Length: 269
Image 1 (tube, rainbow, N blue to C red):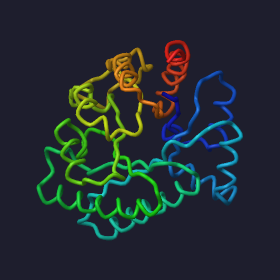
Image 2 (cartoon, one colour; image 1 turned 90 degrees about the vertical axis):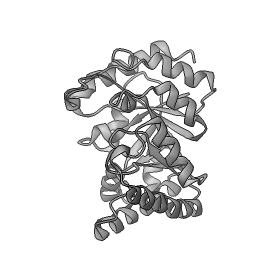
Image 3 (cartoon, one colour; image 1 turned 180 degrees about the horizontal axis):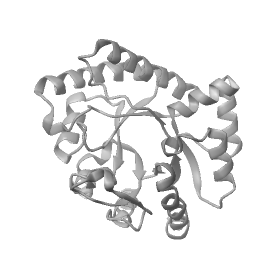
Image 4 (cartoon, rainbow, N blue to C red; image 1 turned 45 degrees about the horizontal axis):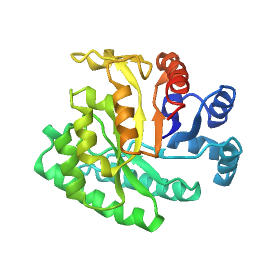
C-alpha cells in the first residue's frame, strides 16, 4: 500500500503550498490526490499542465486520482447536467496529460433508498455513456462510496456496478462514509473488492443523530476500526494508494496525527 493525501481538504491552499508543507514533514506520502479546483488555480498562475507534472515529480509525488463533484444524476436540469458532463470530460483530458489513472466522481445526489427507478436507470445510462468516453482516454472513472448517494450500501454499490457493467467504472472505498449509515465495511469490501481501485482513509467521533456534528479523529483514534480495514486490504495484497482525507482547520490536527500514526504503525507493511 502507498500513502497519498487528498487535497480537497486544503481548499484555501495552493498546490505549491501543499507540496512545500509535505516536503517539510518526515512522512511516507507518495501521492497527491488532486482536487480539480487546485489544478485550475495552478493553470491560471503557471499555465501548462506539464509544469504541474514536473513540480510533483520533482518531489516524488504520483497522482492517484483527480477529484471533482460530479454525480451523473441531475438530468432534470439540462444546462447543469451538460456543464457537469463537460467538466467530467475535461478531467479525463487533464488526467491523461498528468498520467493519472482515474478521476473521482459520485453517483447520484440522494441516498439510494430514495432514488426512483427512473433516476437510477437514467444515471446508469449516463455512466455507461461516459465510460465509453473514458475508454478513449485510457482513464478510469472511480465512484466514491459515500452516504446520501447511489453508492451508500452494500446492496446498492453492488447493483450499481453490475448495472453499469463497464471495466472503466471502478470504486473508491471509504469505510468512514459507510459508518454514517452503520454499513459493515468488511462486508462491502468482500462484496466489491475486485472493483476497488483507490481507498480513502479518515476517522471521526460520530454523532449519528446529527451527522454534521461529527468530530474529526486521527485514523486509529475514531469510531472506525481502521486497523481492521487496513489489515483486510493487506490480506488481499492491495497495492494501490490509500489517501488521507481531512477537511479544513478542524481536521488538520487529526491529519498531522494520522501521518505520525501511519509512519509508526504502517511503515512495516
